[in-house]
Image (cartoon, one colour):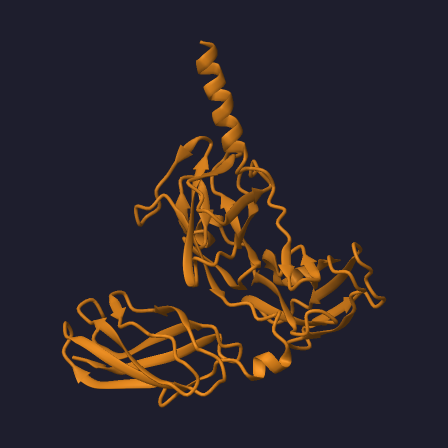
Length: 367
């Protein structure tokens, strides 16, 4: 009996490790930690007036940190920030207000912030859905895991660089008449995920927060998974999946390079970024050929190739020395592709500071 009791206690302890509030700080360069780069307002009403949020910045460097400016995307967003230098170990704030007067639509507003370090700007996001009138939660959160509702089963985390992390959040809903406790099992390595408040009150919404940490074994677009466990039970959605997928794109980090090193770095020059195959019958395999020359002064490397096609492969892409020309092919199986005009995007994740992500295109017509 004692062994059984200890096993239960250990199981509860392990489960609770996924329930604790997510408190991941995003590291940007060597000087900044920020509590988030995306603020999700969730569902707001058009007549509720302006909405505001705050991003907290911590100086983890050894020199004073200065916020030079915060530029908004349009007049509907206003920003304010800590004007005095932020000393090492101290924090400052960036506040933003969205006017909420553009109509009942989803909104995604950017705030571009310029710091003394790093030299490149940092983009912060404010997102939400403005509604003219309240609608039943069931009509908004249509992907269901039992009583837990979410808008979609595959969630975007965003782009991140090696050595860093990326976080995001979405709104979820309790579609039942009783509070529910949401835990997560089978959580992918490098992923943290939590819900707050937890338990979620009956008929109310909560924030699902997630954070992905970069891994040098993982480049480009990768999926990370977690299985919601509601009051101890696992449910499947309409696609017969019990998992929520979170995807992020990882690229190289060039923060430690000087301007001179970046200028002398690898740089691919493509003869054409588009391969046109004309008209072919569905079921045929397309062999799209691309060629480039490394016009930089250091070796060029492709870490990973991604496409938005369902079935594909590619030939080896060897490293290119300065001045060297390289050809490679992307093979598309068109059997499961729809007839008509076709556009497939091929993304190369590279070691070029000037072109860390190279997008190529395959176009044509499937009969």
